[in-house]
Length: 315
Image 1 (cartoon, rainbow, N blue to C red):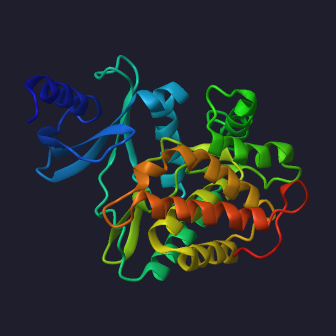
Image 2: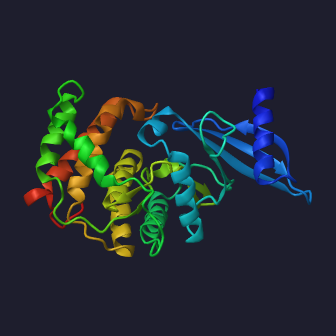
Image 3: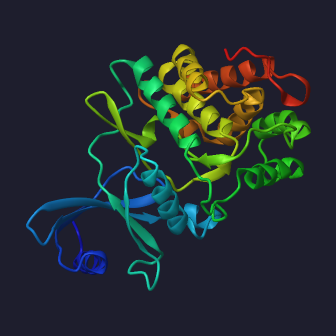
């Protein structure tokens, strides 16, 4: 149940960006892992009902990026102005914030997360098209210096190779494959990345993708990072054939250099290897998840060429 203190905060928040509006109610959305997400229902001056989303980031996000709220707000400005399927940013509460840390308000988008689509092939083709649109977003003349660099994340992660106190045995095996190839000799030109592109961060209505949400992990870097992350998650949900459908469709609409995809697949495998137990469900136990992860690693290893370049096959 909403507390009186929380209601007061949200009323003050609404007044900051729309003094004529009245907060009718607010409710928390379940399932938020990196941020507390609250639906705000407002009545505007003309009597219309408006729904918004309030996002308050958690300790994990703030530790890796103290400016996460501002960065997410600014990248949503870019995405919305480019006409992408993303929530419109409404307000950034950063000066004298009402909550313990800065937070943001975005428009509510109709749709639900759908992890069991009727037509998985069409579903992932829509995901591939939208990801390509994100990566092709026009940014000429726009200040992107605020975005964290994926390259820096990779350098930090790979630099842990020699520390036995924080690297598991499974991680070390993957790091031993990744480190000799870093830095990649011919990476794709850096683009704006979503940073955690997977079906759980998409909304759907009547079989149509309506929004890509949760941009707190946005970075600037090689588009294959987003492609690989989506490939792994799609494999876990729908299997290798649908994963390949996604990959082939992305390449058809955004033909970037796929030569380093095996390296990025191994990097994705390294990032997820200690989190596989969290992916288990009633339908797929941990043993199946680990089998899929092992397959993902092996298909990448089999396609690795000199210094991490790939054979041209994506399968």
